[in-house]
Image (cartoon, rainbow, N blue to C red; front, side, top):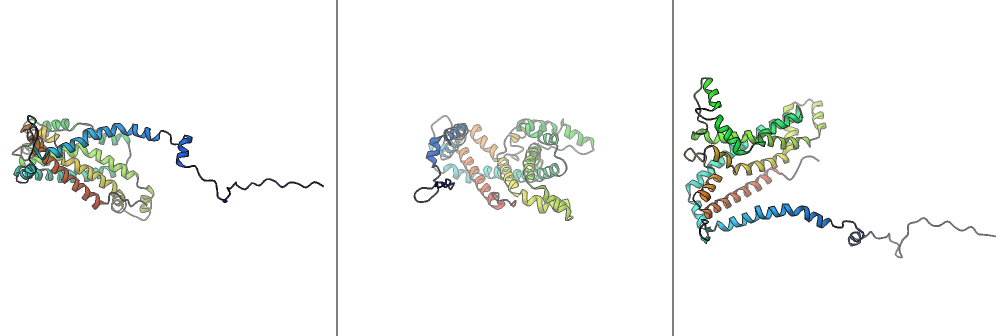
Length: 322
């Protein structure tokens, strides 16, 4: 009489202690080929950017901080003077006047640019998403600051500018936009708003694209108006992107130089002598590189403090999308 053999067990194999087989360790995976060369490849891709960062950002920053404690004019070796440059800066009325002019420009530029860019972005998102319109909006940004400044210098020229010709044709007295102390800074601010507003609007438009459309549909069903949806849906959900855009535009506005250099050269009567232009004049006009470096370090500290404050107040690292 034969006895039928039992079928082989299909239970998973276990070791002596009765545990499941251990997963492969990281070393074993790398030995088997997984992740091989990833570190070297990552370093290869990062190397150009890291080299640029070290050569064009970190080293000049450290060198500038060192020079801010020296008296240096390119012709003689740097002479250590300690805090003399900073003491001179604190008692320099032109420095404080330049800082005041810069703050005035930043307030005008950021205020007008942010409101205008937000309006353009919302209109692009709510009414049309045409790629052609987005290209038209971005066109001024493709122009360099120098070219934009020269174009507007010609348009707003008091005697020959087409802008003042139109104003004169309407029976209004010609306006010395760039030659009057009252008009100069607002005019420069509007020139830069015209150039940068399209780029800022597209950044905000990208943020609007991340807001789910069904939220607007639900609000419409509940009878919400466009104005109410803007304040209750768009603004809260756009806040992180708007915060980052504000940080970028504020930093860029404090560094305004090109437009001033080609339109007013700091005039009239220092009415547009912004801080960057004063730093440039001290370094390359009067060869006071130590003092110019001290003012640059002061500007770096101011921008760092403003950035940290903006980041905390706007909660840029948090989103209401959940």
